[in-house]
Image 1 (spheres, one colour):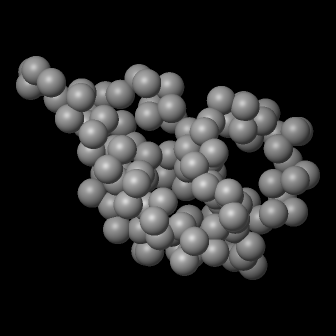
Image 2 (cartoon, one colour):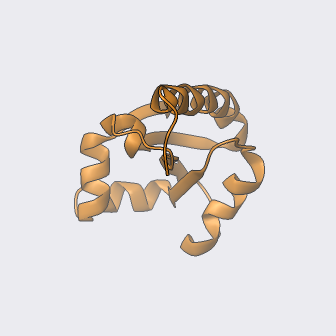
Length: 113
């Protein structure tokens, strides 16, 4: 499928605008820490790029249901994905879970309460 010249730059602007709007809402949602991961951090923007986050959030929901809260409250014009850890899980797993370790090292902290 042909792409318009300049679309990648336009997509980057869309992602950055949506990130800015989301960050304004983070304090009201009880997020303790937000780490941006994925294409916007790596600079590898494509038409399907999304905003990908790791959130530290105090919750009693099961791991598989935690992202639902944020999908409901963050009204996005671009795709967003969320991995949500409790503060205790984050402390325990950030050094031992390879994917989380890598995300913490390569990601960008965009909010820290």
